[in-house]
Amino acid sequence: MWLWGAMCAAGQLPAGVFHSSSTALALADLAGASALGGRLEDFRGRTVLIAAKDQLTAALALIELDGVAQRIVLCPPDLAHAHFPAVIQTSGAAAWVRDAAVPEENGAGLELAVTAGPALTAEPLRRHCTHETEWILLTSGTTGAPKLVLHTLASLTGAIVYQQARQQTATRLPVWSTFYDIRRYGGLQIFLRAALRGGSLVLSDPKEPITDFLGRAAAAGITHISGTPSHWRRSLMSGAAATIAPAYVRLSGEIADQAILDNLEATYPNSGVAHAFASTEAGVAFEVGDGLAGFPEALVGAPGPVELKVADGTLRIRSGGNATRYLGEQVAPLRGADGFVDTGDRVELRDGRYHFMGRAGGVINVGGLKVHPEEVEAVINAIPWVRMSLVKARRNPITGAVVTAEVVLADDKDVPGERPEGAALTREIIEACRRGLPAHKVPAMVRIVPSLEVSAAGKLVRPGA
Image 1 (cartoon, helix red, strand yellow):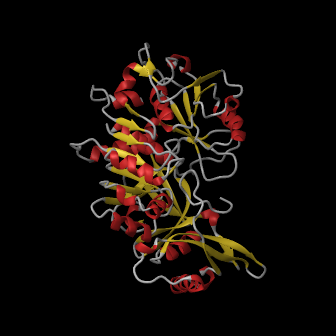
Image 2 (cartoon, helix red, strand yellow):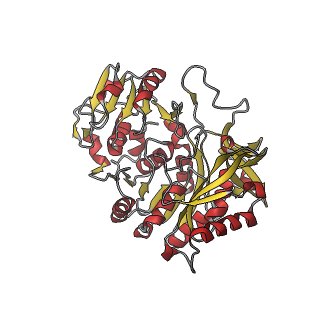
Image 3 (tube, helix red, strand yellow):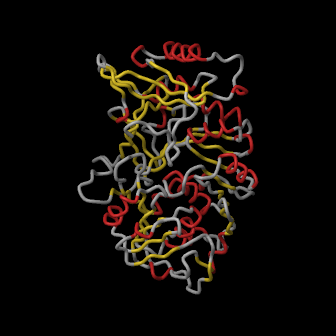
């Protein structure tokens, strides 16, 4: 299956429109035009880096190059200059597509460089697909060099095709939007859904205020929108969340605690609110739409196209959506001997439901006792006057570490009753933690802050992550 062919599978040109912050483009226009300046044939059989700051440029290049390039390496827009040489060497790249915002020196040593943009030019060459293109994604969430993860279009779209087969064809084409960047796994899934299901897509812009982005999404009539819990908390804090009225709201990429699910249910009472689990290596595992944090125990061990198991406290996934392998020398196997991918996400079974506790490597050690920061954050976030929080360790000469928390407050108008102020407020937060957590997990200090840092992937920036 090639992407362009799948988009035209019904014998008609795709009907969708892709909207960026500066322009809109009908996908049908790609049939007789190119974002690559008519140089598509120059990329045939090569490994090609796509390194554009502009998402629409990257999206158009993906559609054109699939089936033509041997490999596509999809670079996120914040890939550090220092990492380009290793990515080029490990992937075997010989060419790249960039836009004017990416420095030329990032592609040093590549045989072919094409500067592209969202504007289309006439393409006299007939599109002819000859390769099962490999798609290379870069992992995020690390301060070191990213890992290169090998996928195929089939592994990237398995969940989409399966879901589409189970659902009746909608009378109205969906209008998708996402806070994610499409160069990362979560955003790429939304891009592929829009392309393959005939819909339109409203792309975000990292430099665009949330209010402007949601205003554009509302004007385009979005029906489906996705983001991390941190994306959604920031949207609620902005006051612009009510600008849109989607039929479907989705969370993924971080733990969706009960507080954020309840807040979104209240904000979008006529929408379906669901949270999903997926990762670059493991693919899409499941989606939960019952309004509760965690996922039902029955999903583990159930037969189906996606198999789940829990071993040594972490969630493992085996499916056709798993990536093939990591690229490079001396890299660990992506799958275990049983074919399952260890996600590294710790889960705990309580009352017939598995709850995510946090990453295996993110534990705080308090005198030999383990604390998952996300577990403490879930308790703090459930306090009505809290919008979001970040729990981390502070060195302690007796226990080695103690738990601390930084807290962002909700807007006063969103809080019922009178909110305590100053020291009384922090005492109330600590008391709520004492009521809901063992003593070693209770923060020794709580600090009220105006905001928390969120990474380019839409996740809270955690110390040492």
